[in-house]
Length: 142
Image (cartoon, rainbow, N blue to C red; front, side, top):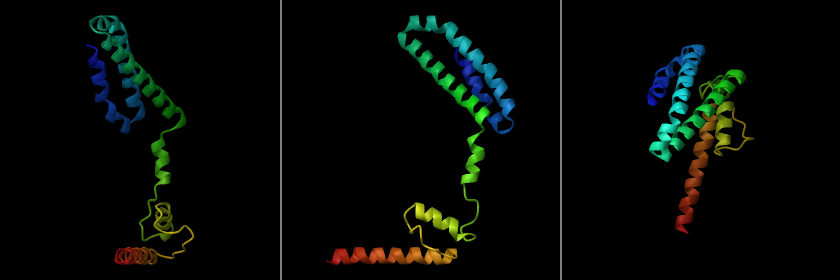
């Protein structure tokens, strides 16, 4: 009986991607049912074994944290909307600048390198790789 509302909460998760409120309303109803069931059975479960009481306490704490995070995302706004702004949607050959910034962040090229197109950037990376391989070979020979 305690697990039923918890299982039912997972039935409605996919609604989140269809309509936020079609997800939030059933989840809040099921959450109230779940917490009511847990709190009302806490004494009985604790009498069986003390670990059962700890498990219920941890689950309630986790659900409260999830509720707080959900409420904050409704008030502040979803982070997934902002992630799209951070992702470079241009293809690599369309803009060498964005590719260069990514490679500079990874330490492959210097930040101040100025490349006008992607082919120039790829040639520079290939040349640096060849030089590094030659340096390694010279170190092995010596």
